[in-house]
Image 1: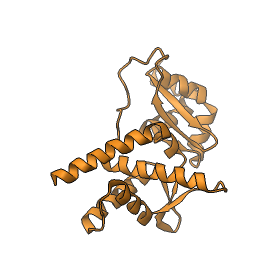
Image 2 (image 1 turned 45 degrees about the horizontal axis):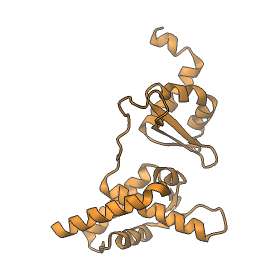
Image 3 (image 1 turned 45 degrees about the vertical axis):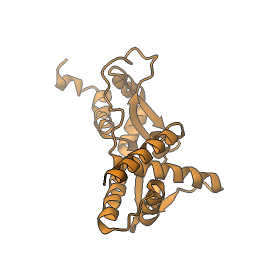
Image 4 (image 1 turned 30 degrees about the vertical axis):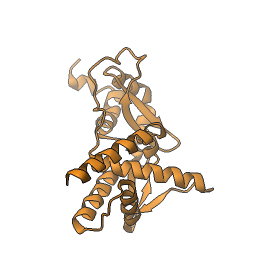
Length: 200
């Protein structure tokens, strides 16, 4: 079957943009066209990626979907991995860890189901406490502000309309920085920070 013939197939034609988008990162229900195509052709998309050892992680309630590796029971488990084990820089990992911990604390203490909102200043303050360093120097603060904005561009934070210094935490943070790995992640990051401090 030629490429022209393939794209005469409605399923292939309509699911192609979803496949391309989700290979680049998570997709969200607010992107109505992609989300509708994903919902309509979910089985085809799951089968397509399953052939190369990738699984679709889709949360309809929170409105996000991304690709992850298949489990050990899958025949494709031993194929070369599509995703690197640690795909984040040190700065992005730090931001993710502090945001995930803040999300846990806020969700445990609130009764309503509203989105968790954090400001740039709050995030930088959390990073200072987490790493036990001061980020008040302009260069150091700029480093962490840039990391927060990069974290937002990756889809983990959504800048609030009219105030780019405040962000709504997207629910996908729960999946990407799960509770089971958070403590180990914190320990590794703190060791890294201590090593960097001693060498400086």
